[in-house]
Image (cartoon, rainbow, N blue to C red):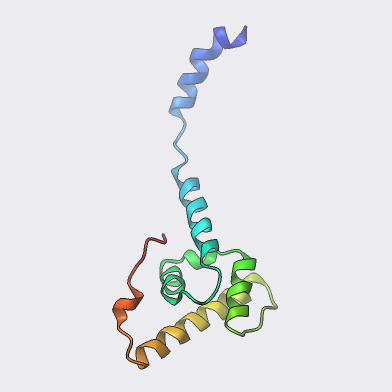
Length: 111
């Protein structure tokens, strides 16, 4: 059949294709972003904001965060992202003013 005659060429061709590591990293970031869905884990949200991973959050995760923070959940994703980012920054500032150490916002494994 065709696999007998072309199988070796197909395998050679497949070995020359670039490995899709970036897609796996993107999937991991989306999983990580989805797992931090409410405002209770400030350091994880702060880390996501600092690393740019916040953009990978789903609208549902952003709304869950906003709901748990008592903030408005309406609007487009860009508006939700801005509202979440503002809330994260405000929480970080409040925590610092209340004497919490910066080390409590250490970088975690969320990438």
